[in-house]
Length: 207
Ligand code: GAR
View 1 (cartoon, rainbow, N blue to C red):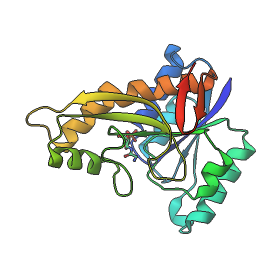
View 2 (cartoon, protein in one colour; view 1 turned 120 degrees about the vertical axis):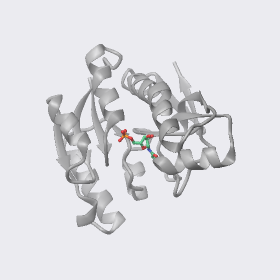
View 3 (cartoon, rainbow, N blue to C red; view 1 turned 180 degrees about the vertical axis):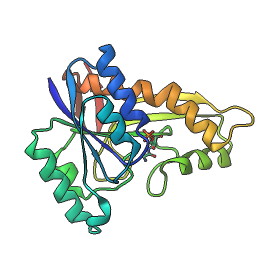
View 4 (cartoon, rainbow, N blue to C red; view 1 turned 90 degrees about the horizontal axis):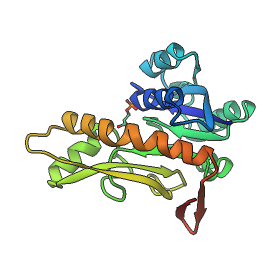
């Protein structure tokens, strides 16, 4: 069983999807060892508690320096022997030391089809605002390994979702979560935990 840490900053619906997938057996080769929140009072911590998973806070506001914050996180995760780090609505960009320590062991979910609507400033509702402003007819979600380039790491899974007439950023966000994020994130986690993913020249291969 791989030991998973889920890093969160907010509501934690993706965390919920992961916990549910552990219950239903979609994730069977790993278990969530700890949920780490960058914010006190994040609802994701309640979800962890309700599921009997330890939740801890490593508050960003106490570590204004990105390098120091990253160092602290690495310390916490290494002490627990974490195999896989999942960024599930974690709104902080970490220092490169993080991906050096956990190379090809950090997975992120992004609410668009990378390389569209990604990179600096594209997070949460902003992503959906940008997609609607461009008038694209499909968007979706991407699960990828995290490297030193923001939203630039090797792509593990993507799922397209239609944009419909009358969509607002909030409506689109919800549809993309329900139809894409909550499905492909747990699936990608199981692929990782069952050792079915490999990365070669920046491309993910699935066994
Ligand atoms: C999700 O839509 C996730 O893809 C997005 O934030 C939301 C978090 O929701 N992440 C990013 O934008 C990262 N660039 P959640 O806390 O309910 O899982």
